[in-house]
Amino acid sequence: MIKTSFFRVILVVFLCSAFALCYVHQQTEIIKAGFQINSKRHEISFLLDQYRSLVYNLSRLESPGKIKETLCVNEITLCMPKMENIHRVEGMSAAYRGENHAPDTKETLLAFIFDRFSTKAEAKVVDNKGGF
Image 1 (tube, rainbow, N blue to C red):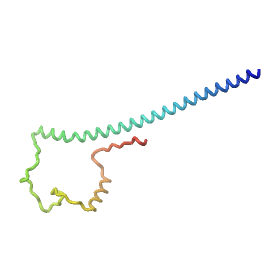
Image 2 (image 1 turned 90 degrees about the vertical axis):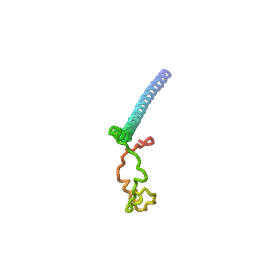
Image 3 (image 1 turned 180 degrees about the vertical axis):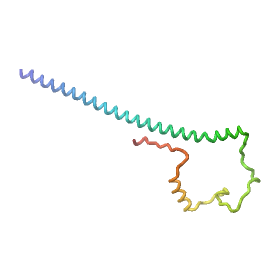
């Protein structure tokens, strides 16, 4: 009799442990699925942002084609001027004359500083694959 009650206790403990193990496994899988869903949502959000910026850049790149189309409709042709039609003015800086010169350090530093505060025409695509 003691032997059968001992086996019953062992059986009950084993069954409770098995049910508890199944419950913990189920909760772990639910949490893992939640993390995967959150990761996929973040990835989709990133891809949608990248898609929007690429569409914006594409529309910006198509603008010269639209200008060219408008010029063709109005029968306007653009061509480079001949050398005899180019007149040089002496009071201009070297940058406007097309000559190469080394810019001053102050101009470069100022340009660098002001470029950091100004907005650019094209949207930037940021790759955030490493972090969320």
